[in-house]
Amino acid sequence: MGNVVIVTDSTADIPASLAEDLSIRVVPLKVHFGNETYEDGVDLTSEQFYKKLKEAGTIPTTSQPTPNQFEEAYKKIFKETGSDIISIHLSSKLSGTFQSAYIAQQTLGEEVPLEVIDSKRASYAIGVIVVEAAQMAGKGASKEEIVNRINEMLEETSVYFMVDTLEYLQKNGRIGKASALVGSLLKIKPILSLTEEGEVYPFEKVRGNKKAVQKILSEFTRLYNGKPLHVGISHAEAEKEAEHFMSRMKEQFDVQQEVITNIGPVIGTHVGPGTISIAVTPLYRS
Image 1 (tube, rainbow, N blue to C red):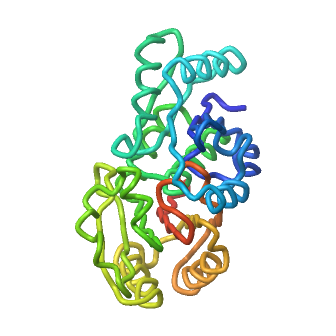
Image 2 (image 1 turned 90 degrees about the horizontal axis):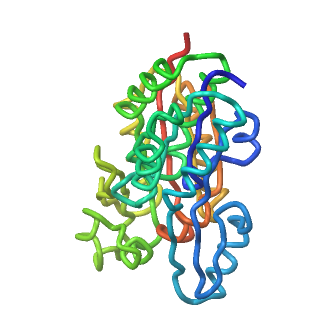
């Protein structure tokens, strides 16, 4: 254990084995199917979630951890480790999770050495940042060094995602600036992204999946050609498509770190089955 512990929430969709290897602490959000409540990734796996989603016939709801839950988590970590804590969370434009963590930070004051960061991202677009932060922590980097690197990654990380339908984003109120696309998706594949503030917006409308993939690859070429990359692809019941996209990325780019992961229950509630998200950040190793 280094001098810094990295905390995130379950919407980062980091594979459990990777989180364990890097000593990343994960605070779960909740998914509600009627009167049934589940902790994301704790007592409801991605596979179980999508099966329940098909059977339920209605879209579930989600809720963030309370400030008190974050406060207790931070106290426990500090008591166990005595380390500084950096806590990186789902975009504040999409959830109250960051706000809950921030309130906990304000309540704790100087009791726990803590930095809470709004990733302004979702799914493994948070994960690419969290993973590198945890790798730095494991090598003994200071809190200040890690925070500086996180701020760089917040500037340089890109994410694009493709959904089969906007129904889930619309019904859950997370559609943001993509609302103009509703009702116009016949044979159109929307490529969505997140603004600098972390709000969903339509990046491009193309006809068909192949053109969507090519458009995203072209954009990554413009942004990252020749740079060593960490590529994370998260998917909702679309593993073959995710693997194909990763193979295309490895053909065209210097992919030094790669992760394919499931979109978990909370993010899955908001984007629906068939979604693929591609997150890229350039790696700068000392």
